[in-house]
Image (cartoon, rainbow, N blue to C red):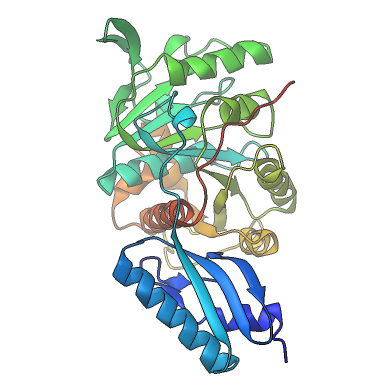
Length: 366
């Protein structure tokens, strides 16, 4: 009797990828599956393609098929290495940056910039080299959040060419349009001007070697988002939302934008901000004033990771306005929640890089 595809995948789901600690079916490492009553053939992508690891993976797959389907079936498992390197044409812009992460939101007011600033500082605390581009051209807030609102970027000479040198604080290199405009000056630009400014923050800036470059995008979907994916290969996107229904509806559109056929940027997951209210005098109490676990339900509905649930705490807002991100508050509930989010994002990026092809630049005619 010929086994079904579901039976084969269920059997192989008992096999773990040793470096990623998850089963090979869940990680979508099984491909080219062909089977008959007498044989089953497929390929498996692995993180470590060394001969002894390949042999162990073949043996594990054979054992799973023989155990859960039939001992009489011949198993042919081709073990191939996961793609790890970017294509050469993806290295023209930001060649020294390993991971470019876009942080977006479907609507304004959900705390996207707060999440981005704390994520950047948290990754730097983990020992990573981190950069941050404030791409919210019309509402730049990072200079204030990093207590560098009065700073002005300098220039640096690299191989006879002048580049902008990012401002640095809390171990994070940063650039924002806010450094080039008066704090009270409204930025009134058409889309092409804003897109040009974004490109300059990538092409005309010396970022050096970075493990992470975070991009704080404007809310919604528009010119800046398209300019980003056309300029640099975005490793993955994070979508920030609150539990409210209208925020979730817009967040769903934000996730959908990255998943459309001609963009195809992997969505690392959703961060649910303002997930519950915790008053300072009752730090162990949780009040779901904006709705309960809307971000959890949306993540499950879309099949993406829930990267964190961050409480609504007054000190998070105060910390941002004081220029000292809340994640630096060490053992407070909000700092703990933010640190867990940082770990989840770092893990999601690691899994994405080990299981998926590098992102390609988006090419559009319009």
